[in-house]
Structure formats: structure tokens, C-alpha cells
Image: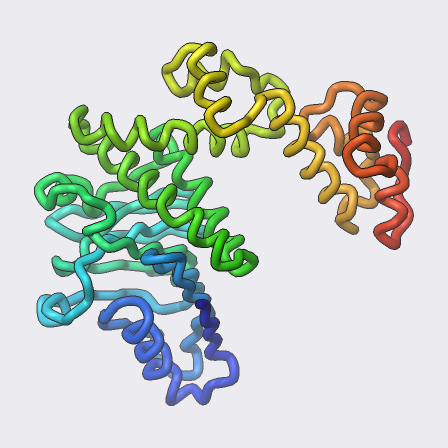
Length: 325
């Protein structure tokens, strides 16, 4: 279930209360410091449930959000929030630490302890709430990573940032079966990020092993357009042998070459249909997604979709150019 809120057509005098009611009812109880001029209060967002996980995307000019000691005593199930910065910057404050986030950075904070979120330039973030019981990390371990910036310099955090951003962007197009299938991998990936950042090999071993197949697939998606994406590179990035990589993929019925071709073709198909690409040649789009030969691309595209790239482009109701033009 998802709800969308937008204060544009709400009387200025009512906006702060409406925002508070939505956030308190569907996300978490917090004090929200808005712009001092009521007519300048703005907020738009979507809140969705993906199994036990809640996802909230928000753009707002609110500046400070506080979960105070009194609000911590509410009846919300103990949960962890994962914050993903979309644009601008923000600060997460908890347990005596401050994490400054820039686009793509992650941070977690615990609802059972007071925290403060500072957004001097306004909010543009995704928030993911996960019950602590599902995360299954000891409280002593979790307290080591709250309000710590998990930047994209960390390979597992980089993967998680890409995955959670895409999950937030696509959740409204998913049916119940699809949302159910991504809930547990998302929780497992978050556990893997936190366990590796804690540096406890015992805590990290199980989530890293359980998410290996998932992390490999997400890595391939994230680097799909890169021409040097190979079995050797994928294996090296995950500290496994090429042989073991093929074993892991085989468990899901995935053949590496077929998977890359199918997913690259799908991205080409989407790009060919986009009006903004009308001046981009078919050959350039094919090269963008890892195809080095225009003739080979045209052949496999027609095998997959029954029409040539040029015919597909024309069928999208605007005139495009050919493979070489």
C-alpha cells in the first residue's frame, strides 16, 4: 500500500499539521521544524510498505527533524532507519556522532534512541524503516554504526546505495508478489553493509554469504554499460574465483553471457523508445550498453524482439536514425 502527499493545494496555515499527521501515522513520531513563514512550507512525498519495510521518499524545505526522549517512549516497534541522500547534503546526529551525507551516501539511526536530522538546504532523501527484529543485529553492534556515514567508497555500501535508490524509484510499479520478493534481499543487504562496517568477521560472515548471489546480480546491473564487465572482473570484485562465480550464478539458472545480453538489449530497447534520444544513433545507443558491433547488435535485437532496432524506433511514433546514421 502506498500514499502520496503534496502540500501545494493545502492552505498554508494547515500544512505543518498535515505533514506531521502523515509522518506520525505512517512513518515515525518526530518534531519537525519548518520554514518560519507558513506560506513557504513545502513537502511532497510517497510512503510505501514493502512487506515489513517502509519506504518514504520526501522533498521538503523542513530544516530540522528530532526524535526527542519523550517521543522515543512511543509504541513504535523498535526499528532502524536507513537514510539515502538523493541531492544536497544533510546531517544525522545520534549516540554522540554526526554523519554528514552527500548524494549517494547512507546512514542508519535507531528509533529507540533520540536522534536529530539536520537539513539546512531542505530534504531530498529516501528513508527505509526496517524492524530491528528483522535486521537481527545485536544492539551493541548496531550502536557502533548509527550516525556513521556509509559512503560509496565502501564497496558493499556502494552496491546498497544503488539497490535502495532503484527500489525506491520502482516500488510503485510492483505488485504484491514482486514487493514480497525484494523485502528479504533488501534487509539482508542492509545487514551485510552494517556487519562489514562494524568489522566483526563473525557477524559479517553469514550476511555476506547469504547475499552473495544477490550482490553479484546487483553488481552486474550497476556496471551493465561498462564494456570491460567480465567474469574475471565480477569474481575479483567479490573476492571469489571465476569458477565459484559460475557456480553461484548457476544456482539461479543464470548464464552470464545470456544474462548480460538480455539485460543490455532491454536497456537499448528502452533508450531507443525515448524521445530525448531521437538524435542519438542506434549504433551509439548499442555502444552505450556494451555492444561493440552494430551488425551483431542489430541481429541479436531482432532475434529477441522480432523487429530490427530501426523498426522498433519507428514504431514508437517518432522518426529515428539507423544503425550507422
